[in-house]
Image 1 (tube, helix red, strand yellow):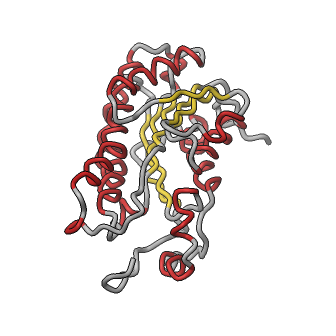
Image 2 (tube, rainbow, N blue to C red):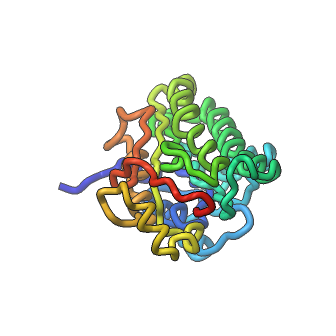
Length: 266
């Protein structure tokens, strides 16, 4: 028996699509027959080489830019967006406890990782109100969360705060609000732990750090982008997950918490 995800010709917008998880998610949805619009901001990367993928540039911190992103996606990809995958995000590499964190860093992280998703969801839901029924029937939002949002992350409180907001505050609010725009609409979060992406490459070169990071993880491995992308596709599928909404799915190998690092160490 072949497995039909029900995503053929469904329009999927993936933000931050040039990065490790984003790029793999684009490829996964294309393999499932979806129409994919891939968002990027400053670096288009490998997206330029993917056939059948519409690429659109936008600064998620800017209201007009986000509104134009949704309009351009609909115009270039033959109809409004049905599935929104909010994948973009920044993780400042400097180790900055809250007591020492610069206000500019805090504000910029929130602008990208939290205000950006707010603007995207708002523009998406406004467009969804006027979308045809087939678009509404497969409508859903998927946030990419993080174990940082569940357990916190010393030295990266800005990132952790944003991910918690997506995983709990926004997911649980929007799963009740989306149905006013699309009766079958759903909202969920897929939350990975450490993933071997370009953003995490330098950090994961530290073997001692990786050992500590995996200390409470029964599945003793760092995830690869495909581990996350496949779960996003499963959650997005109206066939496989059509009655799943308001869920925060942890893709973390069973992680149970964090080991505390000695003062002064990451």
